[in-house]
Length: 376
Image 1: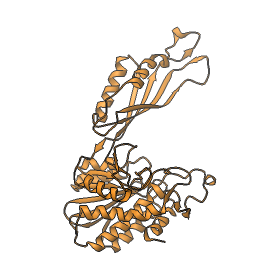
Image 2: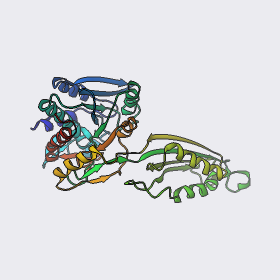
Image 3: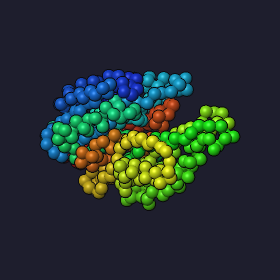
Image 4: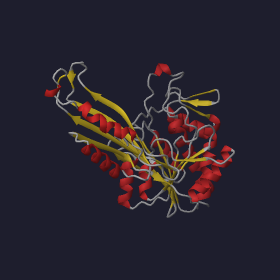
């Protein structure tokens, strides 16, 4: 097997379901120390984070990834054991193969090759890994970024290895992400018998005009390469299950994916004001997953566009779509962030896999980026 395939298999064989790293980071740290990297383990709560650096001064280029994976689900649904990596029909199967142990293995192999070929490279190259990307993302990169801010740790460029390609390796370059904000709304009423509505207050009836306004609102027309801001209601619950009881409370869970026209604080204030205007008796709580970020034209995008075009056979699509990634915690440190990784067609699914040819090309792709941005 190739070096990167062998390392990816070693990582997949460790059942590192969030937040358990299952020994992935110590394995990688040992390799990187042998290559001359300084490695620091940052453990917060139950979460392991690895910070490995080589070189000094700026610019500082960080490769960002995670060693944790989502649960495999029913193992009998998999063709082979999700934590027993298996190559068949030209693909490597196992939980994390695409998201994102394949990229992490490619990062490490690329870093080994880079410092061997360019021991006196410009600036600092670093690897940041966490075991808390797929979970609550509290003690992972979010917490590390706070630590870095307190230290004054500089980061100029960040390349995240999330599976970003759509059909062939390198056909999409992620240059930003929307922000994500989740609201939990509780509308209070008065429970009663449906035959005596004058003795009750139905929170469903009272809230429907406000919910209809939220659902119909056009928040903006997009921003640069970002799509318009979107609000989606994901859970609505009221009532006891009986047909003759007016509910005393309505609960609504909704999420906004928003572009840089907005901040979380502005959206929170806007929605609270609208609910107050409708005269509702309500409580509203928020979870801020991360603000939007966008990397403008510059050396990082230019280098990535040229490298990816060589691998994909044509210029990549430059996109801000998708969900969220840990880059949302690095961007506020002043870093320009992009995401480059393998095809994402099977992530979080049964029989997750990555094409072996793509996996074996990934170290060369990351190495080409390193050599363009931090020349020897």
